[in-house]
Image (cartoon, rainbow, N blue to C red; front, side):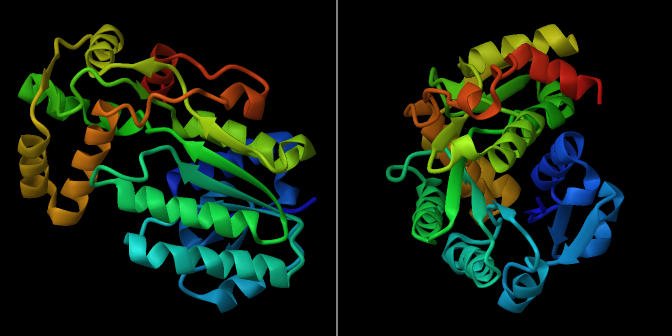
Length: 282
């Protein structure tokens, strides 16, 4: 069985490739990347694949039994067609199965909703493809908060607009493990899984970071508008609005969802503390 993973040069794609190597051997794994050289370090066959180029994928998916489609990172209005390029190429090549990395989130009501909507459209495209399919809805990655700790320490606080909302954080390593199982095992066909961990508040997140990283941070909640202004000034309109929308979604309960991780991975999701310890020891 040959399994291909798109966006293999990205952190999530690379995690999925590495977990597949462990489970089925590198000779059965193909990485697809817009810039193949960036994925050569994975030690598997790498093929060129740009989401904007259907011809790339017509070639990249030859001889492939299952493909993992990592959601693109382009503007929402471009993503749907980019994903369709992969889906159509999979059909052309008689790929048997497609697995899609979607996201948890509110389809209406915050600045992140347009991105959630594009993911739901691709979910529908995958379901209607005629291929066997599985969809994972990823929770919020914990790694960006952990990569940002030095800045948090400098500022003395974690500051956002999530208030007391709970977020079911996950990690790319946990997701990589689950997606490898979803690709390999037939029992997941036709399922949509929320791939998330434990639900915690920002205050609890702050306490756990203090515990693991020996910091002395506090959590301060600000209004949605205030936080959006801060983020857009720091990151620009597009990214600032998206980040503010994610935390507004946390405040509104969009990420406090039931986890299907154990159904997908055949083991429980590791704890928030364990995710932090794994990150610390990388």
